[in-house]
Amino acid sequence: MALHSMRKARGCWRFIRALHKGSAAAPAPQESLQWKETVTPLNQSSSREELCTTCKNFQMGKKSQKLKDSKKRIFSGIQPTGILHLGNYLGAIENWVRLQDEYDSVLYSIVDLHSITVPQDPAVLRQSILDMTAVLLACGINPEKSILFQQSQVSEHTQLSWILSCMVRLPRLQHLHQWKAKTTKQKHDGTGGLLTYPVLQAADILLYKSTHVPVGEDQVQHMELVQDLAEGFNKKYGEFFPVPKSVLTSMKKVKSLRDPSAKMSKSDPDKLATVRITDSPEEIVQKFRKAVTDFTSEVTYDPAGRAGVSNMVAVHAAVTGLSVEEVVRRSAGMDTAHYKLAVADAVIEKFAPIKREIEKLKLDKDHLEKVLQIGSAKAKELAYPVCQEVKKLETLKGL
Image (cartoon, rainbow, N blue to C red; front, side):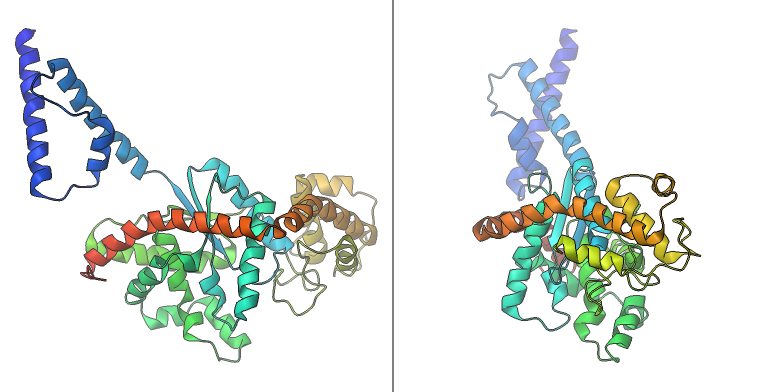
C-alpha cells in the first residue's frame, strides 16, 4: 500500500514537472486558464495527498472544459428597419424568448449591417436600432439570459464574412431564391451587398460556433449555405466549426391579411395587410375587419381550400395558446365577419402589455444604449478568439 502511494506521488511529480517545463518553453495554451483556477502553488514540502488531489483537480478541470466547449449555442438575428409585426412576433420572437430559457448560451443580434443592402437614412437607422432594442426587451428578451447586441459593433462579423466569401462560388449565390425574388422586385438592380448578404449571415452564425439557429421556412436555403461553408472550412483545416442545425418554429408563416397566398411583411405597400406590434386597438380592428376570407360564413381550418379563414384560425390559436381544433370548436355557430373581430380582440389583448412596456423603454435611451454596449462587449469576447484562429489558419496572422 505504501509502495503504491509512493509510485502515485512520483507520477504526480513527473506530471507537474513536465507541465512546468512545457509552459516555460512555449506560450500557455488555453487550458492554462483552467490550470490557474484549479491548481494551488506547490513546494517541495507538499504532501503526497496534496499532490494527488492537485493532479485530480487538474484532470477534472480539463474534463469540465471539454463539457463546456461542447455545449449548445443558439444564434439568431433581426433587422432593425421596419416595425415588428404579428408574423415576426409569432414566428420568431416568441420562440426566442422560449429558447433563452432552454439553452445556456444564446445570442440575439440586431443585424444593422444587413439592413444597409438598401439605402438608409443614418439618423433614422440609429433610432430604429434603439426602437428594436426596446421592442425585443418588451417582448421578453432578457439580457441576463441571452446576449443582445448590435452586429456592426463587433467587427469580426465582416472579417469572417470576407474570408467565407472567398470560399463560395458566384453561381451559388445567384441561384438563391431570395436573390432572384428581390432582384426581380428591384428590376434586376440588386447590389453586391444584397447578393452576398447570405455569406455575412453565415459569418454571423459561425463566428460564435453556433450549434442551433431558429429560422423560418424562407431561410432554409440560406442555412444550407451556412452548413456547406462550415463543412468546406472543416474539410480544409480540420474540425473547427460546428455544422449548425436549423430550429424551425412550430408556427407556420402568418399570411398577409389582404393576400392569404403571401406572408405578412414589413414592406407590404398595402397598410391593411400587416398588423404591427405598435398598432392602436382601432387600427388592429380595422385591419382584421378588412381581412380577406371567402364567401362561406362557417369557421373551419383548411389551409389549402380556405387560406384566409385558416390564417385567422392559426393566428387566434397562436395568441391564445389554444389548439387549432379547440379554436374551431369554440367558434362554432359564429360567422366569419364576427369571428374576425374576435381574433382582433385576442391580438389586442396579447399586444397591450407589450405596447405599454415599449413606450416605457423608449423614454430611457441611456438604458437601451447600455444594454447594447454590454451585449456587444460580451459578443466581442466570444467572437475575437474565433476570428483570430480563423485568420491564423488562413495565414492572416498579422491582420
